Amino acid sequence: MIPLSVIENYLSDQNDGMRELITWFLNLVMQLEAERQAGATAYERTATRICHRNGYKDRSLLTRSGEVTLKKPQFREKPFETQVFDRYSRVETALVNAIVESYHQGVSTRRIQNIVEHLGVDHLSPSSVSRIARDLDAKVDAFLTRRIDRAIPYLFVDASYYKVRDGPHYVSKALLVVAGVREVDGHRELLSARITDCENEAFWSAVFDDLKERGVHGVKLIVSDGHQGIQAAASTAFLGAAWQMCQVHATRAVLKTIPKKDQATIADQLREAYGNEHRLQAVADGLNVRGYRSAANTIERFLPGLLSATAFPSAHQKRIRTTNGMERINKELKRRTKVVGAFPSEAALLRLTGAILMNINEEWETGKRYLLMNEE
Image 1 (cartoon, rainbow, N blue to C red):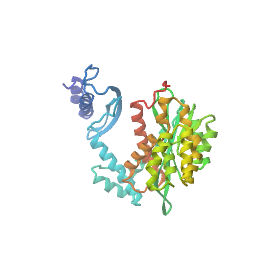
Image 2: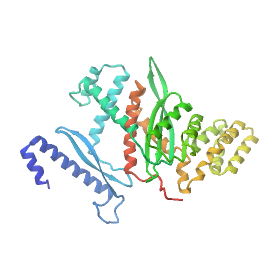
Image 3: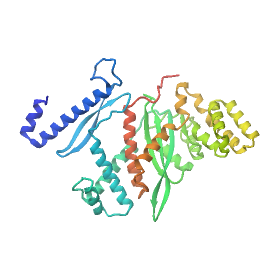
Image 4: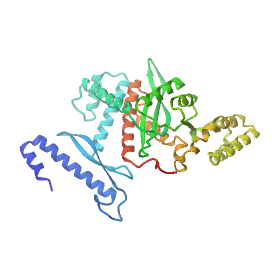
């Protein structure tokens, strides 16, 4: 039944009353969705329950009666799914894509208004287009420069590559993302994202120095690919921290010079040898005997970094020996940005990818812990 206060507000002020009515109704819809997905009502003890509530997250929604703020339920075990925001999300995404595509094609901001009107979004002035970019830039910047002020024992670093306009040309630039696992609760957190066309030691030193200035401390292990700039910068920025070569990247590097017919066999040998110095050396010796000297040298070059994870709790090692989690982030970024093609500027790239990373970070905050930090 509709609360009496909602009806009274509607009778006294139809505009505000309608927004309150919509808010009440859509919150009720999401409550019913949450009960169906959880297999139980709130606080109900039943064998049919498949997940547990984890509070709410405020989410704004633009309606015909104006903007309303809804309470979106959260689950511990899995993301909550709702149909309430589907239409809003489609329009929002189409709008952003139209703006980015228009910038890419060199279309004027006045032309953008005509494009988005076809998407059902009226009254968007040229100044509104600039305001959307400014507002989103401010949110992304606040997210990427926020204070951390906590111990992050494990850092993960990885890159994905995008075409970006540089003067009259389009060039490939790297978006480098840094994530970490918090000491206090074992949750992952996205810490930094930067665009660069040069991954030298100076660049990485600047990234790590920025993290320290924002309060990151207690770093014990940095996990990345085999880029020498990362290794050199990590050794000076976080004294005493170890570096772990991502085992997936290491396997790729070794197999690069191996004939295809032998790759599966050697990949299996590496998988069984990781974490054991003697076994890794035996694989390298075997490759050398077979004439695969370059592959053997690759193993020996990365050997110290391939063992660093073994110094940490055994329950953590499976998740701190690779950058697989970062690879999944990069796949999501690629999936969400592929409609854009080539970006008109670095700012446009960081604006869109930064917004996606913010959403991923929110899911991490309300999702399952990545590591149990008190495990041995």
